[in-house]
Image 1 (spheres, rainbow, N blue to C red):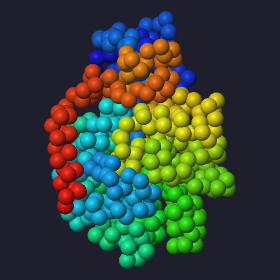
Image 2 (cartoon, rainbow, N blue to C red; image 1 turned 90 degrees about the vertical axis):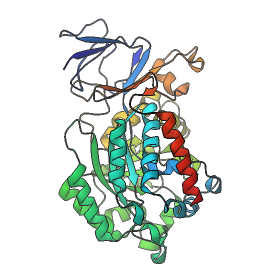
Image 3 (cartoon, rainbow, N blue to C red; image 1 turned 60 degrees about the vertical axis):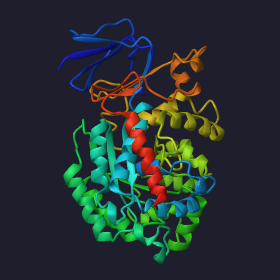
Image 4 (cartoon, rainbow, N blue to C red; image 1 turned 135 degrees about the horizontal axis):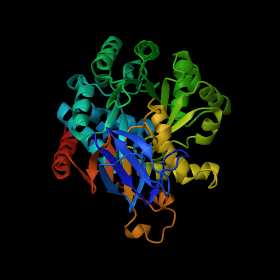
Length: 450
């Protein structure tokens, strides 16, 4: 229980208005004191860490991903497709995914996130073909070997092609199997403490891949067992049209009809809302995960972030699946959010601090962890990302925090989770990255050949 003073940072982004310009004191996995400029710690210190060349932020938090998709990045048949045809081309490939491939895909996604400064990641795993019934258990094992916090969502697909959905029949499950496994995972793995490393949430995939009954019954379980809910919504005009044709209602009406229009819910993408729907989402305190790279790659549209914020919704960031975002790098996602949102709202409104806030404090709130993650503040968990500005692309930069995004920082020098250094000098401490990459590349070739 020694006290560590991370001392004299080059710059620090706390995601709040607190002064930590002379550093942070950490004990037992938590931040216990912020040191203002010109001050020293109030208690004796056991260790110091020189941060004079580091820009420090709270650990970044990724709110939407599909880890398994790292195996199908930049696959030629879908490079130029929009969402629906992209999905229908990839579904038959993903249907052959096995347990070993999922383990490798999960570790690659988490390793890449970690190296970007990400300390917690939510994954939306909705693929459960018959050979992959224990997918979430596999992901939990993979995550525990690397050391990130995770919120693993028990996704589901129950509406197949034969009944008007998009997924092939081989990838869907019966409702009772989905509900029983959801309860099992919460009971077996969900941790509720402020230092929790594993959370479980429930995440039927989308209006075009699950029945309304699954959505309704999932909401009941989430309320009874006090966990969060996640789904894709309003990502594309095609989805909006699907909801009108299949259910006779727009996406937010659909959300309300299945009892999901509440503060327990966070949505992936959230692009195609009208003004009244934005007000309804804000009033219900629904969270929206902005995924700019994926939205641009699939030409889906631009999330109305500021309108949603002004209405009362929360905005966080996600890299989305690595077959549409293609890179599991949350710092680059924050940069892309900065630039994409400036096209909609202007340079004066969308600042680097706002975009970094979405990747930290906003994302923590989406996952229900805002009381102890996403900020540098006393009594918060000691999850930190530390960046250097010593590469040529930063030469001549003057504002260190702005430089992270404007000059294109893409990896952390050090990363701390729960007071432990899990990345030191750009290397993950307990992982052979070369070996993992070699196995993952082989698995990707095997999957596409199957």
